[in-house]
Image 1: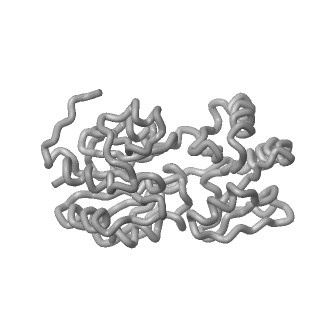
Image 2 (image 1 turned 30 degrees about the vertical axis):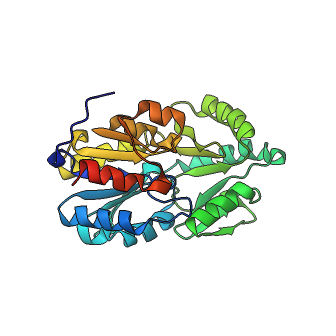
Length: 278
């Protein structure tokens, strides 16, 4: 664990995962945390929301925090899409279209074991197989309707930022191994939750996207705090000047963090702000 420098001026950027970090168990930002994040933005700090959610699942929280007024950013799809809130400018990479059909065929071969395959428009979740309980969790989190076209591959005639396989944890472990063997070096494939298998463009994760963002605004990782709880937060927590794990974080995240804050149900993000940014 590196030495923690508590100098207020050191940290200019705070990056926040959403589920299990910024939001509590009710998927809400508490008012004390919301107000603290607005206050530090008024004092020149930058707030970045970094989530595996699609853009439609991030934007309402960005609006609550007034990121559009203070030059904040949204990293959606675990960093495959980066949006500047002040003007909506988007920087993103895409999954090569020719890979969609073979991936779909592989995932379909596990259909009887309860998996689905989904992607997104800005407003809708597109299901390739059949919505399962985990697809519906994703729908509820992001407040997005689910649509199941007759031909998933033909329907996807637009650039996509990621594919997601929702399904039982034990099945996803097997499927992840198979997909990694086939697409090693071509796609980034990992679990963001035990029941969510992410399929992303190569060399895209939260840390990679944050590095590009910091370069664009003339800052370095030393000036950045990253807070998270899940597997997909590991890269940014290791990259940050101060990597923070929530008390409710996965064990590997706690082991990799520089600081463990309170849980998401105990205003853990507010605790970080009070200690390191005020």
